[in-house]
Length: 295
Ligand code: AMP
Ligand code: MN
Ligand code: MN
Ligand code: MN
Image: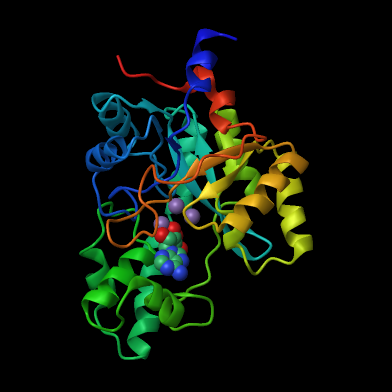
């Protein structure tokens, strides 16, 4: 065992999925780092949607808190007509093809947001675009989450879950179908930048038939994908068991991340997840050379 791998083999509290104000979280990267460290996180990755603009700040903040760091992002992908998410970990954040691919993926968000607001206006919700913008930290990254926060503030719903259910999901007035990156593109950008691509929260793609889910895993693997989130904030114990078995079946590395967005809004806090099951290979053992350690 090389010293770097040996150092990682003692590590259990990795949290490799969360969001800052650079995408749809409410905390700055430094505040997330502080919260993660206070909760015992030893290895952290900030994974903002379609964006790596927070990576340098996150790495510096991680080190200031004594945590090891892996670069991260969560790419929006359209697969079999549905939106799925691919987390990238341990890539070179200066990679040009990755940066251009992410910029292109972000590119349609502004027009989509204006269409979402037009749909909401038709059911009597006025000023949603301007309202959502008040919550946006990064002008290139206006998301449904920002609309949800505005609709709660304006008194249309009591929490963001209700907003998604009533207004922001397929068939509802504020939903605008959108074409994101292709699976092979997203996986390729991450892999060619030296990182590992990971299927995010697989149990959330509930509209997939078993055949479509199998296609996702096999095509992901064929494109060079390397891991799957087994332990995430949105998995039940039974779902973690199912995707642990899928990780073994498809020979994928296992990842662990809270998907934390905001205090009081996210179900799971940073660093508070169950451990990865022992039979699985943690994704970070394959990224030993990509981890940046505090001084
Ligand atoms: P977008 O990338 O603009 O489509 O927004 C997707 C984001 O919306 C996800 O990353 C979650 O943060 C959030 N989201 C999706 N579904 C829900 C839900 N049912 N309740 C709360 N937040 C959700
Ligand atoms: Mn989000
Ligand atoms: Mn996601
Ligand atoms: Mn996420």
